[in-house]
Amino acid sequence: MPGNALDTVVTAETPEGILLELRPAGLSARFYAFLIDALIRLGVTYSLFFVVTIAQMGGLGYAILLIAMFLLEWFYPVFFELSRTGSTPGKRVYGLRVVMDNGLPVTPGASITRNLLRVADFLPAMFGFAIVSILLRKDCKRLGDIAASTLVVHDVRAAPKIELQQVEPIAPARPLSPADQSAVIALAARAPTLTAERLDELAALAAPVSGDDGRSGPEVTRRVLGVAMWLLGRRQ
Image 1 (cartoon, helix red, strand yellow):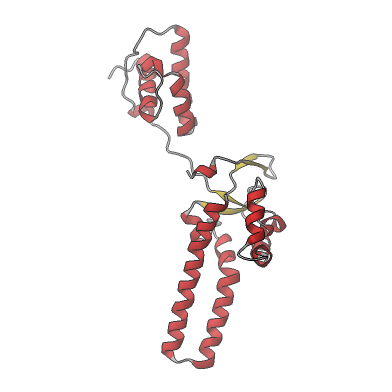
Image 2 (tube, rainbow, N blue to C red; image 1 turned 30 degrees about the vertical axis):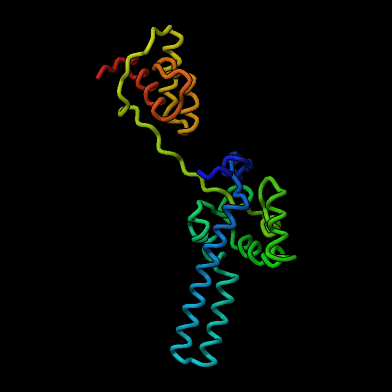
């Protein structure tokens, strides 16, 4: 996950009363995504220009080219934001998507609004207003997002959970009290519900049981869970 995905969290409540944690995308990720989308639009435009030139379509060809340029500039983002992924190709590369403030998929009206207001975001030059707004706001909204009640967020995907059946049992590095044994077994029971980062963090606290005092990381986590498997009676 990109580092700035962990820096800010915005809480949103769905109409059903469910609280969601959304991680707004910062300036760097949005800039690189925008750059990729701009290159795609530019490539399509040049391709159409060469087709029109080679086909010698005259005025009709250039009219088609102008219409295509208009659609690419204003409706390219809208088309992709209203798709199942909620993101343009550039945003998809960096794991970003556009959602409403409540975390629900963006609506057609909101997508059109946020993209039409790119004109205001561009002012006074080179998206000056957009950059200042993104840097000053915790939710990293540009003017178009504020008007449309939308957010550009990191599309956080669940990390693969550790499979306890695949953990090799390990005998404890030292005698454990009943309380310590219960704590290690409880950690193993919670492991499938935790993110990899949180699991590593908790396993580091129990690292002495596997002889890994002061260390942390996936391998330490597996050894701590291995001790839990040993305590549960697995010996092979």
